[in-house]
Length: 171
Image (tube, rainbow, N blue to C red; front, top):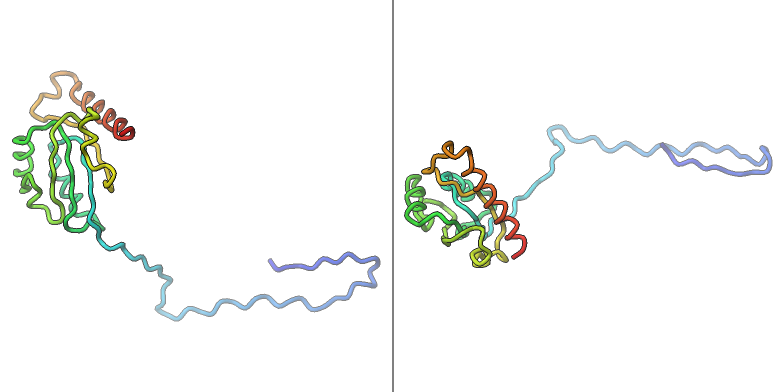
């Protein structure tokens, strides 16, 4: 607990005992009502570029979650690359009160690109260098009967999402 002095001497008569060093003083008591606190300051909101690869019928919910993200400033942009056609995207977003350009969201505007998520030529068109985050979602068309083919639609969606993820790491 305390430092000790060890002396090597030729005989016991050379040993002189002294009083032990006093223990260090205890820390001063904390005043009542002064809990131990750490102040965590949130970073100021920043404009961000977010890339979203793929499309889901629940895209509006995902976009609303992104729009509410702490630290996200007004004027941020979500770039969406998906094979889903414009009229279907528009229909699914408007059903949840979001316009194709992002009106209906508070801090985010949307920029849409159309094409296969597994084609490198499409992925390189995305602003990946500026992106703060890249999200890859499986493209599932809920108009298709998922049970009719034994789940093949879900397997294909997973395969495409994984392929897009690998390609994104390479570009």
